[in-house]
Length: 241
Ligand code: BJW
Ligand code: ZN
Image (cartoon, rainbow, N blue to C red):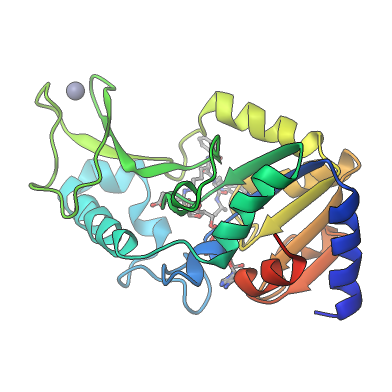
């Protein structure tokens, strides 16, 4: 990451009024939460592709719930890092700031961001598979697995699995936020999972200056105006709150 590249982005930040940020698992890596892909990308020896699916839950709800309960415990013991904290400061700094996240860990909330566009849901919400009732439950571990709704049926994690559609209203707001900004940041995401990975491209084709922050180049780097290579907490600290 060159000083000139950081200087370019800092100058853009000084001028900007409309900023949109998309985050992925890499933003929480420095909090000690594993990412999904790459060499470190493993959750208790399982890949998301094998457990984060409706088929896996239909076949083995207990096994899927054991994985989520374990992850909830791990996340509960971690704290937001400098990257989360700077993004919370940016929400106050820019007249129009939109935060879109693929993360389900709730660390952006804990850092102080509000109105987060959560594309893939939230691990602290549970949803009934039959009546649809949603409950927020941060008990860790959960008292019994798999958890059940008051109506007696299975609860599932309130997250979006492969093959499931994203919440429509949130997706529409995220697409609008990508299309209506001057500066768009893609931070700590591999850019492999759709439709989230299309947001940086939507921002660019709508005229935004696009910046990627990641420890390595990704599937979407070639589309970005600037690629700042480095850990998100360090790069965002250099860009400043
Ligand atoms: C750092 C760092 C540091 C590390 N600092 N950086 C074929 C082609 C195209 C699309 C498809 C296809 N086949 C199927 C699809 C669709 C599918 C998809 O995209 N699949 C691809 C994998 C091929 N998408 C879907 O199914 C989505 N729904 C959909 O498309 O609906 C329409 C539809 C309906 C019916 C049928 C078909 C389509 C839903 C996707 C849901 C994703 N869910 C998960 C699990 C959420 C719940 C949970 O957590 O358990 O979401 S999967 C997982 O991936 C999770 C993440 O949010 C998501 C994205 O991952 P992310 O955040 O990018 O993490 P990583 O690990 O990939 O990358 C981390 C990055 O950080 C790396 O780049 C590191 O270098 C970097 N890094 N440390 C900065 N310190
Ligand atoms: Zn129910």
